[in-house]
Image (tube, rainbow, N blue to C red; front, side, top):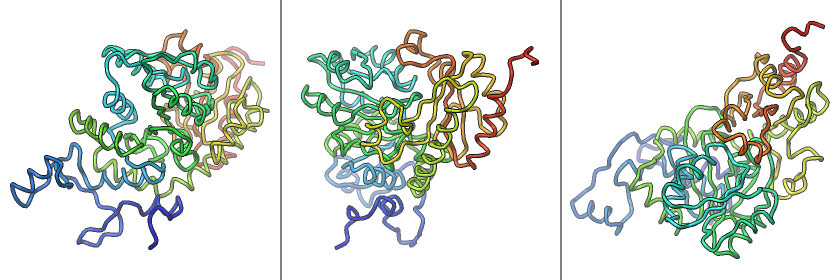
Length: 400
């Protein structure tokens, strides 16, 4: 028999999880209902008690959401997936389900700004202790471990400097010390990188980004083992309710259908832009894992099938030069979101990482001169021309 697990990635992205209803629909339907009807009181009791499976209530069971969860789990190589209302809700759900007061979490310094705030400001209020390590330095992780460490949390490639952590080494370190490893796979998606296959215990997604691919909806997901994800994280979702809506799940399903094609195209365009930026006037440094001089280029090549769509670079002239470039663009969208078919540009120090202290930004390597571009699917020549306008712009009052 030809099983779903035998299908190629692109086929699973189109087919897994959909069981046609009596209507015989070809595209997955959207089940917009808050509750589900039972055939009898006994059937209702059996479902609520867990004796039988089936739909119960929209906060934690919905057929459209379930198809998205099954499909994403298949693409990541995981046993189970729980979808949430946002990527941050996914991180929160994982931590609230598995951690308790007195537990220690070791987080990479190079994570999305709001992720750092969640761990440092909010989870710490509940007695969860938080430490930080350098994503790319295994000795820093080793030094940060405590007897109470229960979770290592990394984002690779990192936002916004595209630093790359060694997933296999981090997983081995975590497991040797009785801890789990969670990897935020937002920048690569399973089309380019599958952390579970390298030993990670959990994959976190902001489905808002590349899984959607067109900037339409907000959502998130946790992928991992049946016991921990379906058992523990689903239990938190059922109780606390940070749930994904059926409509958003349906949109993400449509995004998954083109994920492989889009990620290859994003990667090709980003590689070309990074190479062009290295020779562009006013650019001090370019960060992209596909460049041979990237510090973790070899590691990225070993654990990713391509290098992704994010390019960051520093300009001579600090924040003034960065803002002048951003304000000079006419094609690129000035927004902090990423993963869109439309190219976006932002200043991380004042947007995505603006809530960090100056000391935290310095520790993460995020300078005032840094600009981040999420390369879309426009013609690369048009993207370059739009940036060239800003790179050639002179400071106010500098007429010659």
